[in-house]
Amino acid sequence: MATLRTFTLGILLLGLWISLPALAQQTCDRSCMKGVVDSYLAALVAHDPAQAPLATIYRHTENDVVQPRGEGLWKTVSALGAMQRQYFDEVQQNAVFYGTLVENGPLAVTAVRLHIENRQITEAEWWVGRETDKGVDGVDGSTLWDAEYLTTGNPPLVRTVPAAERSTRAELEYITNSYWDLIVDRNPAIVAAHPGCYREENGQKTVGNPLPPERRNDGGLDGLSDCRSGSTTFNVQNITARRWHVIDVEQQVVVASALFIREPGHSKRRNHFCDVFYIDGGKLRGLYTAMYYVPPTRPVPNWAPYPGNFPLPTGFGETR
Image 1 (spheres, rainbow, N blue to C red):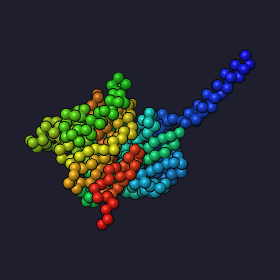
Image 2 (cartoon, rainbow, N blue to C red; image 1 turned 90 degrees about the vertical axis):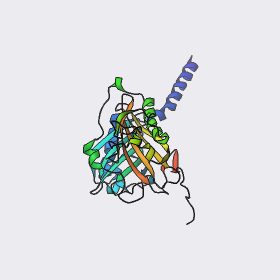
Image 3 (cartoon, helix red, strand yellow; image 1 turned 180 degrees about the vertical axis):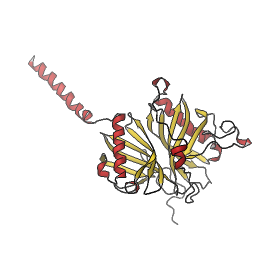
Image 4 (cartoon, helix red, strand yellow; image 1 turned 30 degrees about the vertical axis):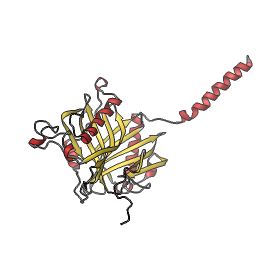
């Protein structure tokens, strides 16, 4: 009998020992993640990474370029802008801030994906849109950008959707993926979206414009463009490096990023963007984007599972 008790005790102790690493990993709920994000943003404004809950393995990119601690936005951000939103995914332990930042005067439209492990931030992936940025044609100041409209014209909602009205995680991902499939296949019937759905790119409204007669079947509502319109003019061969960062079931918001690959023969720059999708009743209501147009040799998105340049542009590495 003593031998049996000893054996049983040994099994229990072994099970406890095996479970200790799992117990040591502390997950974050929504309230915890909000606290982490708030601390991170406060440290950014204070120009002091030491004030943020950063892990020793913290990695930070801005428009796909790796920045050392204390560099980049850590030096340039002087205040938070008037428009600030946060989204949380307790399953993936990701949080996203989408909003405006003051960079020593000028505003920037930004999104950042923060990955949290053991209540510390291990990854920060920033998309930063500035009014002076190069546009799709590579010309300075020609980018889409309107921080004022984003702040006062049609800012993102802050909401809690009743449980009975929520789509599931799988449904939310499907709805957002259908939007990107629409652009690639140029077929508005593909996307699960409400007629009249809105779209703001770096805050600039890109819908509500009159559709010419030859494009009346290109999405739209009452002769005006909506988020389903324009796929025939985007010159997009594929939307690749698709990643879903936050599926916020409570707010019915999905934050995901991807990369525009242009059609052969077109000189337009690639576009690396972070989309914030709002879903109502199982359909896309509209989306907000933080984005920039990628220089030809910039490694994109420079995060797993697509580290480095994805794909390499034609002629990359040629001797000139």
